[in-house]
Amino acid sequence: MENVIFWFSGSGNSLLAAKKIADAIGDCRLIRITEKTVGEKISVEADRLGLVFPVHAWGPPDMVERFILSLKTVNARYAFSLAVNAGSVENTQGIVNKLMKAKGREMNAFFDLRTPGNLGMRRRFDAESAAAELRKAETKLFDIIADIKARDTYPMPPVTVARRILKSGFAHAMVRKMARGFDKNFSVTDSCNRCGECVRLCPSGNIEITGLGKVIWKHCCNACMACISRCPRKAIRFRNADPENCYRNPLVKNSDYE
Ligand SMILES: Cc1cc2nc3c(=O)[nH]c(=O)nc-3n(C[C@H](O)[C@H](O)[C@H](O)COP(=O)(O)O)c2cc1C
Ligand code: SF4
Ligand code: SF4
Image (cartoon, rainbow, N blue to C red):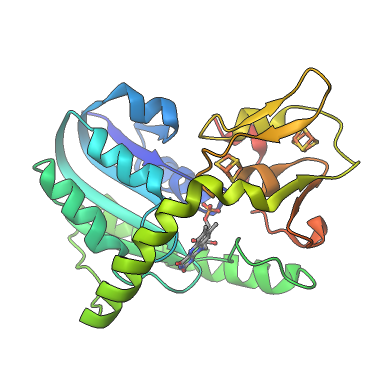
């Protein structure tokens, strides 16, 4: 039976991790989680099954939660979840496991990987510290891959009751509800050449270029940041931040988002 990894990624950190795991374990199909895959109601048959995704507001992104709920059946010899984050995971893995349990297949291993943050628009982007953080992440990923290869179990990280309820409970649910309108923060600058990459990369089908050549967002956003961070012209602005300060994983190409 082949290995299967489902991935969700905006600025490329989770995509890079998923690709590296897939290369290392071999015979692995990488499947991007998008609105389309959610709609397909997939039946999973896998030797190793992986979920690789960024932490969004102390939990999994809304689309990842809906994807797990959409699965028809899950049959896997070994299942792992990798929460890619910027330092605050809280009960993300508890949420994932609860959803998987409802599908009859709890996870065997829960990993987390600290990477550069892609949400805050820094006053000045510090490429050197992002590169140092990515090097650290690469070393940790090496250990994670060894565990996945050996099908080792790995426990969920401990989290206090208060943090589970306040951050991964109330706050996460509230931010999830607001994610659709997250795109109201975006605007397009004159650098846009209407290449259509943002339309192609959006997992929600949330972006359109009108007949008049204007890029518009349709308010069914998943707050993934793919459009803003992968725009080849850096033509998308978050509020009034300088688009040059937006993070993107430098080791991932737009063509990797298949
Ligand atoms: C809307 C949003 C919410 C986020 N919330 C958290 C969070 O609660 N905790 C955290 O550690 N990182 C958070 N992050 C940062 C991402 O998890 C982190 O930068 C990750 O590496 C992004 O992965 P990607 O490049 O695959 O999208 C958030 C990012 C976004 C866009
Ligand atoms: S990816 Fe950037 S340059 Fe291309 S259409 Fe979208 S906003 Fe314009
Ligand atoms: S509009 Fe941008 S941030 Fe929102 S889901 Fe699409 S690519 Fe992600």
